[in-house]
Length: 514
Image 1 (cartoon, one colour):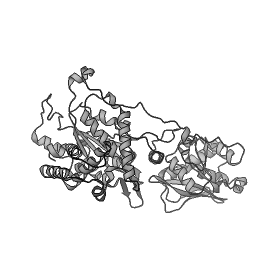
Image 2: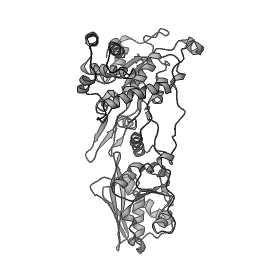
Image 3: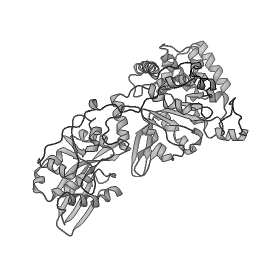
Image 4: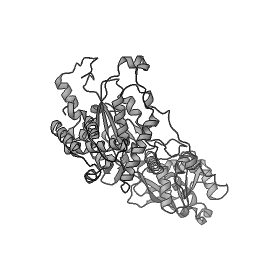
């Protein structure tokens, strides 16, 4: 008996349609899977055999051939367990040959040995693939139901085990009630960090506000304990809430990465990724034999924070240069190619020297000039050029820590976020016909159109370029930051104060030599 069941396999952050063709015929007992299957799929033979037997079905002592079409597409993962098992069972059940459900619905799920259907990676893009291919609905693990509920227009049938699936197909039991819709899924968020709790560091908070408003990259330089990490972790609290499209895209990425907890629905908070400096190049950028998203893609629509910036491998840092410009990553392999989105705000932090106390009035630096120079040279000039804001974060005076009343009360994250949202609305209106609508994405043509400078501004900028020896890229970064500063003030044109503040945020060009 021959049966075809619809399913899907992940390729990058997309799920491509796959037809699981199962042929159960006479001959010596054998079980073969063909169609460029990876090891996880090849090992599924034993999972499928045990699951079928332990659910009370007869495993046919015949020649079983499973073809995964199209045959030239490499398949990976364990989501094809369920359709393969259903195809084998259908070979011994004539009533299943008459049903049209295999042509109308998509099936996916990993089988355990007792027949339970376990959660899979990429349930959300798989449900999206089912809708795009014209399926009425999708059978998938119950643990992935809330995640797949974000896709409207198709029926989501969440199943617990193989036996329940067969009962639903044969109409021996009713279909389960639909999972919660997106509007019913509550926002899940950790306790929010607030800028009102930060003492001092007025300039650093101002830099973060500008970075959030214009999607600019930022570098903190300061001694240990000055609050660099604390400030960076509060950046998501002043970013606007994800739109539905952004939330869907972010959830798809995390679903493919296997980071969606069972029962979790659409991601509502912006990602904040903080990889350790020992991370490998592939883990940071993405890749592998079957291309997988890396940390830069997991931070899409959010923040990528690289603490101890010079301690990262030079090769990994240099690969960051391309996604910081194009906002995507292309992973090319001999048998596969994938494009991953990578539109994030890069926040980095570093010490001024190996011991961390260079320029600190409270501690003596023990590093030699050679050690300091070698430490700073770990970050290349081209990479530094792509970071819009450089800000020094000095240690907070002891009096402000011991006596909070001496410290000026800071603004709450909500007040800052309101200004950020207002500035972003101005940019979105200005760039309403663009894919990326923020000042960090302004092209050279846009700079000429939207960044008009009077004579005073041009003279100030010319003086800074000559004195600091800035590159052409640094020049455009200053204009983009100045445009964001003007947007925060809700003024249509850039003035000399905006240019001066933007130049001030190029502290590494002014004081450090790389």
